[in-house]
Amino acid sequence: MNEQLDFQAVRDGLKSIFARRDISAISFSLNGKALSLYLGKAVLAGGLFLIAWVLFTYLPVTYQDWTVAFRPAALRWDNPYYEGWRIFNPPWLFPILYPIALLPPAAGGGLLILISIIVVAVYVGSPSKMFFVICSASMVGLITLGQLDALLLLGLMMPKGLGIPVLMLKPQGVFLAILPRLNRWSILVTVLILGISVLIWGFWWENILANQPNAGVNISLFPYTVLPGLILAFYGLKRKSDAFLCVASLCLAPYFMIHSMIPAVVAIIKETDNWRWWTATVLGTWLYFLMMKGF
Image 1 (cartoon, rainbow, N blue to C red):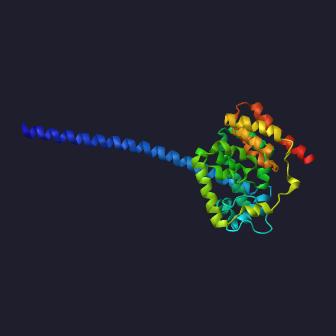
Image 2 (image 1 turned 120 degrees about the horizontal axis):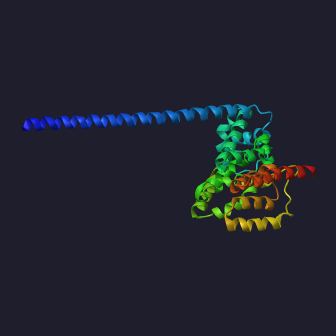
Image 3 (image 1 turned 135 degrees about the vertical axis):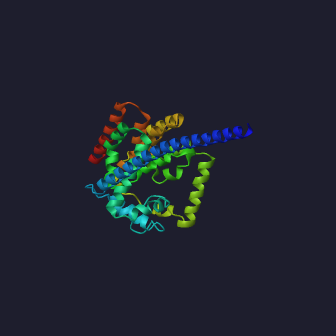
């Protein structure tokens, strides 16, 4: 009787083992299908990325600012304020751009713009909103010149205000958006980066102050926009609205160009859910640009 019971126990144990193996096999099969799906999506995304990169590389534009200013400065990131280059950005920008700068000028400019468009798409989170951003004069100017302003959205997206060093890269259109992001950690990170930058590049801001931006391309209406800028800043801080704060920054900035409006345009479109607002924002960028060109 005991031998029979032992045999039965062994048989039941084997059944249990095989049952678990069957479950594992099913689980492995399902995981394999999920893995194949993810790999397929990754390959598709990579293919679309490469196609878009090629298209942006061969756009009939010069990427002038990238080619003439940012790329040479990135290639000499240890001394970006080389005499003859008009550079107005903090030096920690250029080691970040260095890998892109190693590419040929057109390919690097195309990759920079493609990355900028991906950042905008992630920020607005909607294909329809992205379409309106692409149609704005600000985005057209950014693409044509090979500018960096869309990357400032990374600073707006980073948690706990840790993106302040990113916002400092081109502050004229976003500097008021720094205020609600000030806290113990954001200040600590910013001071740490500033300290490291002084150790590497010395008192780099002296080089920026020594250069004067080209007044011929300035489209700021400062000081006539100070009053609306202060009103917008008040409501922006009260509502913690990046749209209000970015527009207020432009109103209070003595100097900015059409692509400097990108953070404001994108933030307005992100924070509103009415296509009429989107249309008005896009048309506003074109009307403002044409008006200032007429001046």
